[in-house]
Length: 440
Image (spheres, rainbow, N blue to C red):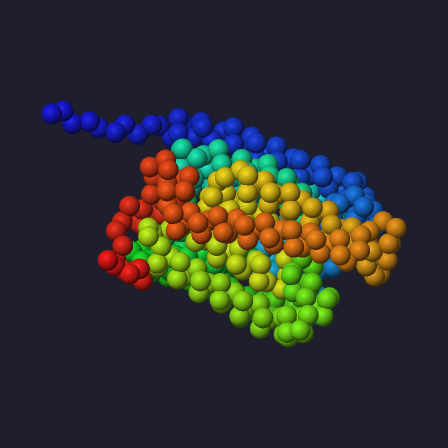
């Protein structure tokens, strides 16, 4: 009998297959810039023009509205509601870019344009990095699934509305580090991701449930300690020295009422009993808790341990559909996880159609709302709410297919290739230690 050894290819050879994906991601980033070119050419100073050209972005107006042209986030001497309403990593990204813009351009208007351009360059790089990391998470047999993240229509349309792509790159980094069993790095990136946008917190629940089923407690605890430590390192200085600026995000999130895109807005608008009259914060948290309980039961009773990406997707989708705010750019959170959870083009394409329709519908609807009240250019309530329900229903359809794949693993196209869980890390190929499944 002769022993065989597995030869590891050089780093350059291993990176070559990712180069086309990086180029496609760069193409997606460029297309996203072109979508907003009418605003970049001066249209963002007129709300009607901004909405009719579908090129709205938070990046340029917040440079002035949050006093970035003159002061630094969190430490600014401004009214409480004028502080930056984002976690500290995003606030510091904004600060560094604002410093550069102020250093290069003496004129405030020119600074705002440069601030936008530099932010777009950074977001484009984050999209490229996120796509490459997603491809690595998917594994060699499903590497090209990352094209959805690079070129999906909703990604191109929503890429530069806000700073969400920073959190997207960090989130994919978390999954890759966990897949490679680098628990400390996974924790550090998770802490940074939660300090960038709050939604990666949903990954903690997914990791906990799969740890409960597999009893791989040490890697989970190492990751959580690293995440908590990282979050504290980047947050405590601002908590100590800029308390009002730091807590602005958390107060704003708690006190913010129902907003565009949320199904709760439909219930309020139509005056539904309870759903349209009760406290939305309580309704949202209760609904999310029920869905998370259902996900937990599913995870612990499924005939085969679910894949990490499947549980992350279900948890994040549950958070989005029950939230009191559902901005157009939130699609950037879900695309990579939806594809990793179920890379089937039919349901994904249907969802993308719904997201694209919502992207156009929200700006047309805002045209007809006060203070613009341009009914000749915009759409009415009923038409707008078709878009709200369209994307919710298509996401629920995606969730239903993922649940079906979990209950019937033979339907999971990822596992049909012979892999257990490409992103599973220490969960991959391990036996169950605890389930709620009845034994024969």
